[in-house]
Length: 241
Image (tube, rainbow, N blue to C red; front, side):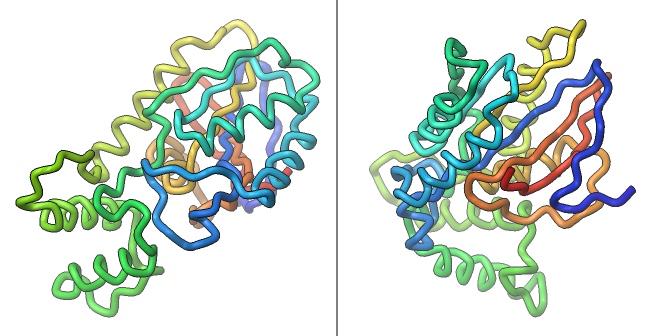
């Protein structure tokens, strides 16, 4: 059965269901600026987006709630928790491994400028490259290389941009660490609040049944991933309810 963005399949009682949410809209999103490890607060529109999603998820019992430690993700998690009918005493567990990609010296730059640099950097390797042709791997690895050149000779220390293998490793590790804490004798619903590029990388890295294009999910959208017997499967992607 082919998946589409609104498909939700039935699960057995033994499965763990991950509700993976992208944070609400921020001011840097509206300005089309790169927002990796840099941070910005949710806009009023972003808060409304999350409140609506929280209403749609309010009846679900979450056994655990995890969030990136970035403010925009944690604020999103808190709004969703405040709407929930069953989880008022649940604590949000923050973990920096759920952060967005680190873009190094491109943080807070215009996204268009970063993508122009990536296309120029790869012009001899990939012909007719456009933004739509840039994979997550090419994106992260190109930014990591470019960041080293841009910061060469700068005395001030900063967090360097991450390559794709580094990103995949931290996302894979945090997901398997979460799975290791689950109660295998009963079904669990686990809420995870993270970021657009990281959601794409997480799904591409872990899920075995991807049959749809995995592009950047919308702000305050939810993607459902089911886990059972060592297998992660995508059941819905980029849904707003």
